[in-house]
Picture 1 (cartoon, rainbow, N blue to C red):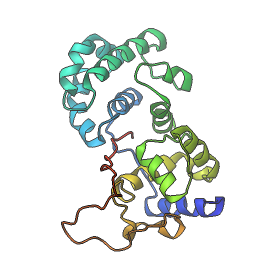
Picture 2: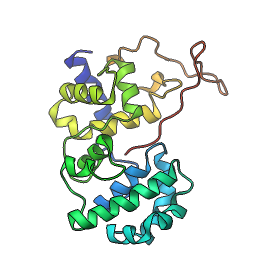
Picture 3: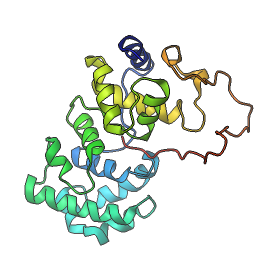
Picture 4: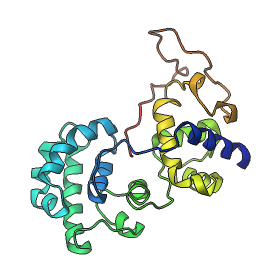
Length: 235
């Protein structure tokens, strides 16, 4: 997809949702960071079910560090990889207290030095908490970018760099939200719902599904392919 249709694709998403927001529940940069760490391999809905009690018990890095991994674990057992996440959150909270005065750093390198925080998580925090023009690429965005031809790439970093180059500057901050919501609810993994896609006129996907399937019909999949899992949330 060249620059003009790529911009038109994103502008169509923008027109349909002028004020996109993350679906994760948070109150400040720290609770956002915790929620994004928890969202790896888990849906935003699942994270939102466990964070109210966790944040009531540990609303600050100092309180989270005091809980420790054993204290955090009971609050998050219902989400994927909870044991590793409990350890990461405890260590992350300790480092925030020891190195950053209990504040979430605004610098990418400092964020990525925290346990459980990679480039995608750092991009979400920089974007949502601090208003930076970053673009996090999760499974949904990776799929949309490749399927539509918007910014095809073999790795999330490659897709991210191409999306940033093709996105009109004034749309860059919100592009992450438009694309993740589009992938989550319209351009789905098993069957894209092209019949209700506001950007389909600008999409290069050759096998558009333009008619809703009959009620109860199962999604078609390629011969020999295992069903594709729906991705967890990231923001």
